[in-house]
Length: 523
Image 1 (cartoon, rainbow, N blue to C red):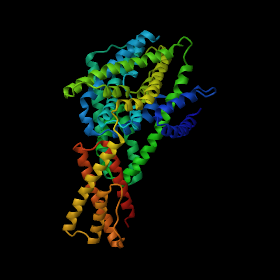
Image 2 (tube, rainbow, N blue to C red):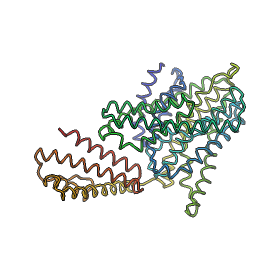
Image 3 (cartoon, rainbow, N blue to C red):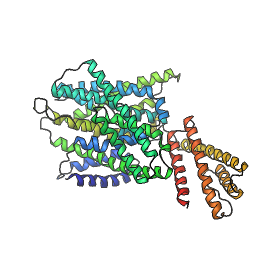
Image 4 (cartoon, rainbow, N blue to C red):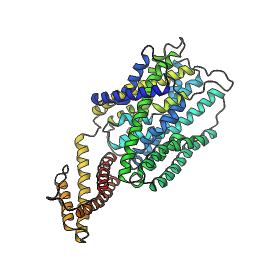
C-alpha cells in the first residue's frame, strides 16, 4: 500500500471511528489504535513501513505544539515542583526498571534492554492530551499530567541517546558528559523555543492577513523543531517551550477574526495528524510481528510484563509523592483518588514510537544490531496496550474517584465569569453615558442588552425598535469597545484564580465570535 493511499485510508477510517467514539463516549485515539490493529491483522493487507522521519518530523511537531499551547502558564507554575520530580526522577526509575525486567524476561542483550527502557521511560504528550480532552479533570491534575508528559522529553531523550551510543558503538559514559549533554538538550531546546516564540510574536503582531497568519502558525512548530535538532538540542523541548510562550500571548497576537480562522485550521490539521499517527500505531504492530523470527513467540507475554512494570513503577513513585505533597499542605490523611488518576493517565504513544523507529539497524562495526526487530515489537506492543487499556479505563476511573468536575460546577463557573464581565461592561457604559460620548438611543440599547444579560445570562435583550444606520454603526463600535472591557475582566478573573483555563477559553471564543460578527457587519 503506497503512502498516499495509506494516509487517505487512515483519514477516512478516523472520520468513521471519531463518529462512533463520540456516540460510544470512548476516547477516539484508543478506538483508532484498535481499528488500525484490526485492519493490520486482516489477511492480504500489505505491510505498513513507517519511517522515523515521518513520525518525528512530519507528525510530532504540530501535535506537540497544540498540546503545549493548551497548557496555562498560571497553573503550570503551581505544579512546577512535582512536574520536575516526575519528569526527571520517574523517567530514570522507569528506564532502569524496564531495562532490568527486559533483560530478565526477553532475549534482548543487556544493552538493548536498556535502550528499550529509555524508549518507554517517558509518557507521551500527544496521547495524554488526546485522552484527557473529554475528561473534566480539575485544572491542577490536568496540567500536572500534561506538563509532565511535555517536559520529560529532555530526560528520556538524553537517556535514549546514551543507551544507543553504548549499544551501537560501545562507548564509555562519564558523569560530566551526561550533565553537559542534559544541559545542551534541555537548556538549549528551551532557549531556542523562546527565541522562535519571540520571532513569531513579532511577525504575527505585524500580520493582518488570515492566510499568512495560518501559514505562520502551521510553520512555527516545524521551525522550532528543525532548528533545535540541527543544533543538536531537544526539538521536542523547543516546540513545547515555544507553544507555551505563544499560548500566553494568544489574545495579543492578532484579531478575533483571525484567531477563529487559525483555530479552525489548526483543529483540522490536528485531527488529520492524530488520525494518521494513532491508526499507524495499530497498523505498525502486525507488520513488526511478521518480521520476527520463530524463536520470539513469547513476545506478547513479555509486552504484558513490561507494561505492568511501567505501571507499577509509576504507582510506587506517584503515591508517595502525592502523600508527601498533601501532608506538606496539611491536608490530613492522604487520599488515593488524585494519585490513582495521575498514575493511570501516563500513557505511551507517539514519542516512544518515534524513538523506537530511530534505533539504528547496524552497530558501528557494520553488523546488524542484535534483536532490533524484537525491540520494535515490544515497544509498539507496550504502546498499543497502554493506549487501549488505559485509554478505555481512564474515564471510568475518573468517574469512580470523584475528582472530575461536575457539569453543574462548570456551568456555575461559566455563568459567574459572564456575570462579572457583563457588570464590568455595564459600568464602563455608564461612564460613557456620563461623558455623553454617544447618542442616548445607542446607550439605552446597549444598557438594555447588558441588563437583560445580567438578569438572564443565556438571552440577549434588544431595544424595542431598530435604530437608524448611524446609530447602528455607533452601536457596533461601542459594543466592540465593551467587548475589549469584558476581555480585560476575563483576564483578571483568570489571573486571580477565580476561573479555570477551560472556562477562560470557552468564553474567549464566545467573545471572539461576537467581535468577528460585529466587524464583518461594519461598512
